[in-house]
Image (cartoon, rainbow, N blue to C red; front, top):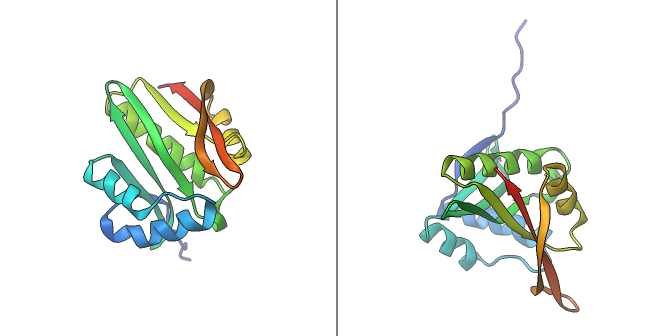
Length: 153
């Protein structure tokens, strides 16, 4: 008898060639997505830009900036069809591992108060709210605040 092994998700450094797939996910899950230029700029600036793949499928990605002993998670996203299946948690663990490995003692991020799923994810990991950035995000009815969350690594 032979066992059939399923592909295990793997972290792969983001490349410019990945941006079409990244933009497909980004545009599908956000009302105000990052632009292709935001991702290209992050790649050029040598931020930690990573994709999460299951076989050939692009499942998600994150953008992480690490400097001065702090990590700043700028974007963490999972394709709509793969949400609530553990990929967000796995990606967050990888981002935290990379931040820690590059000397970050804390990790910070912003999240919309209306993004209940993301707030729940970060809460499960022990992130705490440390500030509010008023009118940070574009929204359908003007602007939406950002909650600033942090976690000691």
